[in-house]
Image 1 (cartoon, rainbow, N blue to C red):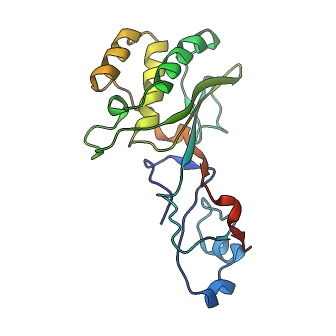
Image 2 (image 1 turned 90 degrees about the vertical axis):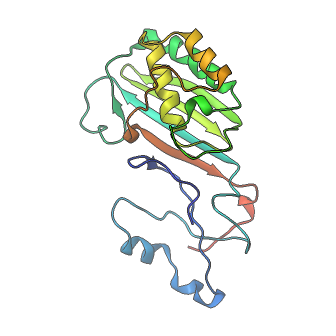
Length: 210
């Protein structure tokens, strides 16, 4: 059982999954054996023994994603970053304005995928900010206790739409206050998004096996 679901094409630098087995079978589960069996785009970095009722998805209290954008064509980052030439350094303040507005939200109906099946839209964000790592690379960092389906890609789309003049701040604020989807909502491509952090309250009590 995995720690969560993401859209097809989204990456994960850190991801946890749990499974149950008998104590006597622990010796057969090794990092080397699992990596030898798995396809090349999945790598096991560690194996831990936790409490019997641990759940990888429901026990997680912190999740962080990073969305990457590059504005200069680069074949080496094309699978992990969105090539988008519509923003420049001067647009960083505009991107930050919307990210701060998103960070102040508690209900995210406006940033949920249509017909997502979500009934609970409450998320407690602890981070929502843009950084520019160099002249042609931007990153959106967002962390929360949970996320609704499609939320991060729609948040990034709203930031980009505002920075490029396609929507105004008042439209975004009105949509959030009314619980409606952002006008001209844009779900940016999945391949620029990576899950980078998952945390659990009792993680320091796990026993590493590999």
